[in-house]
Length: 88
Image 1 (cartoon, rainbow, N blue to C red):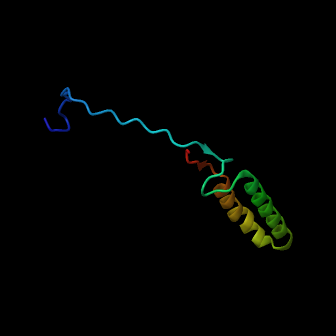
Image 2: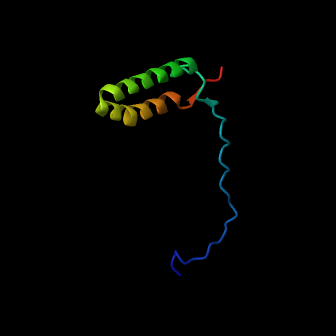
Image 3: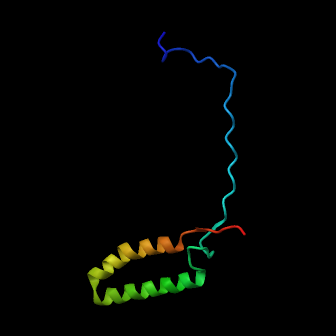
């Protein structure tokens, strides 16, 4: 028999169980962290970006397309994504 066709014979030894995972810090999109803004500033920035997008839609259609299809999703994902808070 070739090694690929050899039957499996248990040897009785087992590998060690994986170490338990340490619970991660809570993730919350509304929390303020060391690298993000609090909810009030996030809302103000979002409103400011919407105003810019509306202005571009009125005066610059190509700029508005880039703003709404590229810049806004990217900024909103980064700004409103959940953040890890340090436990103190």
